[in-house]
Image (cartoon, rainbow, N blue to C red):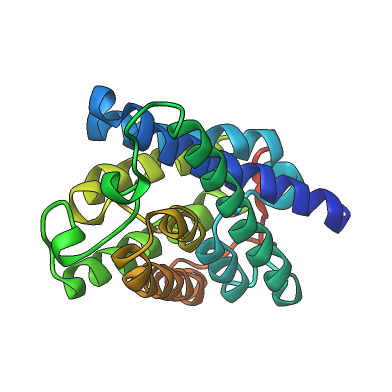
Length: 241
């Protein structure tokens, strides 16, 4: 187990990169790369940081993953608050950096552009109702955590976990960008919403609550449904080999 200051730094860098890289692709290059490119950008942020710092902190970069892994007995509940605060702060710092850069071009407005925020109803790309968005976020987050727990299981092949995790996040975005711009990460939703303001903040409750519920469901059911290895494997073990 690495010292907590190193784990905090790893979670900060990983979450910052996820929000800056993923949301940055949407805000700065979205028109050029489209939904496919944005989905790939989010997946690549997680893949690269899981390999870079996953062996230090476990590579959560997401409050819903942290609580899901704690529910699944893969992470100590006493460390959850520290991780959650780190992830949210990193997301806000990343959104701040992106906001400053985006204003380097004339006429940019974070409120008018949406600033890669998530939404339902009129703020949904497909005008999906809140309950449809809620269900999508719960289901996609649950599958995200199930995949993470599966590929970091001691029974799984070693060394490939970050690839699978990056790919599943890409797939999640391909499914749900048209629904709500894809959250499955409360920190990722909080950072940009603070700069978009208005309805982005009013609707933020859903993108905090639904992913957390999805993560808790997966954490509570993985071992029950699929069993477990001899010893729960954090990401730092799964990336070795």
